[in-house]
Image 1 (cartoon, rainbow, N blue to C red):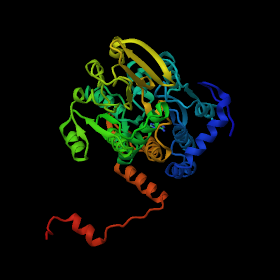
Image 2: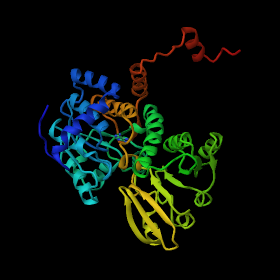
Image 3: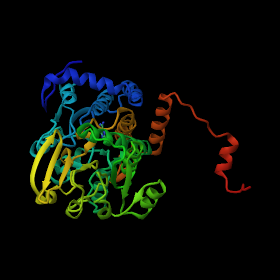
Amino acid sequence: MSSQSKGDVKDRSLSKEGIYRIEWAGREMPVLSLISKRFQKERPLEGLKVSGCLHITSETANLALVLKAGGAVLEMCASNPLSTQDEVAAALVTEYGVPTYAIKGEDDDTYYRHLSAVLDHKPNATMDDGADLIANIHQKRRELIEGIIGGTEETTTGVIRLRALAKEGRLEYPIIAVNEADTKHLFDNRYGTGQSTIDGITRVTNVLWAGKKVVVCGYGWCGRGIAMRARGMGSQVIVIEVEPIPALEAIMDGFQVMPLLEAAPLGDIFITATGGTSVIDRSHFEVMKDKALLANSGHFNVEIDLPALETLAANRKSTRPLVEEYALRDGRRLYVLAEGRLVNLAAAEGHPASVMDMSFANQALALEYLATGERLAPDVYVVPEAIDREVGRLKLKSLGISIDSLTAEQQRYLASWEMGT
Ligand code: ADE
């Protein structure tokens, strides 16, 4: 299928390796491949110009191919400077005809130049992971708004940003919040982030989890997954929360819960997954143990206050790839992984294909919904329940699992209010 496209990637000669990776991920993406077959026949996205700002991984490449199969004319850029798989980016431009702008380790200027390049495509629909594309359109490329029927957003952080924009009455086109689908956050955020975070930290440090004290900041779906998997590896897990109900859930799930300032001197490994900013700050660094590891799995690199850590450090050096040692003036050393960027994508490969299958099935079907349904007013919408359930049904089917269904009597019972004991 070789067809060279425009784009900016590290090295086009990596494409063979990229093809293998994309095909390998595809093995575990049966729902997407079913959608692809239908899209090839029905072409619901015929001629739709889509600009996507997602992590450029082998799983994302499989999504790109499904959208192309549906008739979309797609251009892609990275949604994080450290998450790109260069081989995959090379294969997208050289083999699959998808203009792609993404280089692992790109600096901030290049990151925004790449974002701008996919906006030059003059999209009719946007796909975001973190809302950078939409924010850019609203701030700098307002002339594009007229041609856009809608967009999708993949992640919690992006949905929070877009709801803030909508609340100010300034959101200019409809967004489907893919993250809000049950078949997305219950699986991707929990099992995906849980596994890939442990994977990323292990790959770059080779740390033994058994017996470690692991401090997980945030008990949303991502934090839950991380806490659950760290416990599974034999760690003692402390959860940090700011909301009372998730804090209670963490206690009843069997974790210790306390303020971060109390946990700071205890932890061996700290992992943030809050979506917030400056979660771990100077006051915490000041009391941490020598040799503590600090990692972030939230979307942006602001959860660990690195500028504050910098001011405490007498010296800074890279000790292993993606491990930065901060030698503090009092002699303690703290280690920051993957520059405080999402460790599961920067230091590992992101979530496994099997969960991305459901997340990206929601992306593909949400785009189809925008392209073929009634024009929506600007707002943040959840994924229609019918799509969410269909993705769940197809995933179960692909796993070869059948489930019971309600009898007519049970359906009547559940629909009535008259019947009691
Ligand atoms: N987000 C988390 N994991 C991912 C992956 N493997 N591909 C794309 N986006 C992701």
